[in-house]
Image 1 (cartoon, rainbow, N blue to C red):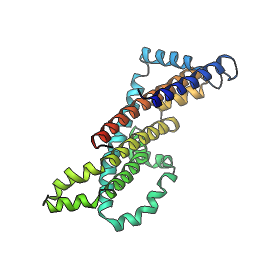
Image 2: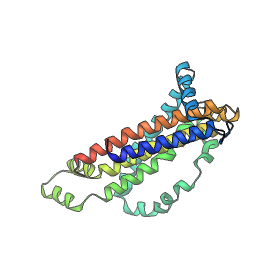
Image 3: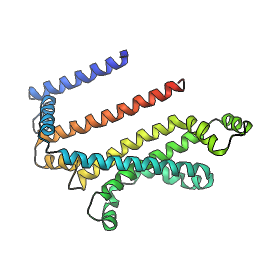
Image 4: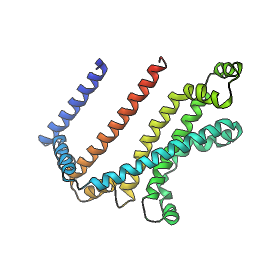
Length: 249
């Protein structure tokens, strides 16, 4: 590993040990936080018992649907707006202020349309994520060098070949960044909706443990979320670095 990676790992270990010591020595009340070692023990117990298997599967399925839908729809809308500059200019103020809108306020309306099921939760996750993919798509297409497009015309490449061989590879880093953001926002949207509005899923279980003052279970589930998010983000980051290495960046 690189020296910077070792430094980050050492800093993380120091922070975890400091929190462990503060909890064990009584500087932090158990009503506020349990020691990290107890979080790990609680997480192992939850996973070993299998009681959370259905809730974890429900949450991951919702995140996967929200993320995949947002990537597809965000890419198509971003490409469409890039091809329609006037429409894009008229929508720029809306896109600039989109994340100032609390998406959760639409939940009652979604219940009316789709019923008391998982669909409203997935839609909220989708709404959190698709704009990030859309804006990344537009940014990536904006940064395709004009000389590449002129070269394609010079070699008499068709439109489909130009998109497949020049436009998409040139915009790939920005598109991949949009995928990373979409996945992250899907996690935030789905887990947040479960925590506030749902009656199932990991977010709901965290809220239930919080309301019941079951700190060990609550922090165990929070640790589970952190581990899953860090793993997914690490896999996407490694894929992005491999892509950049192939591009010589």
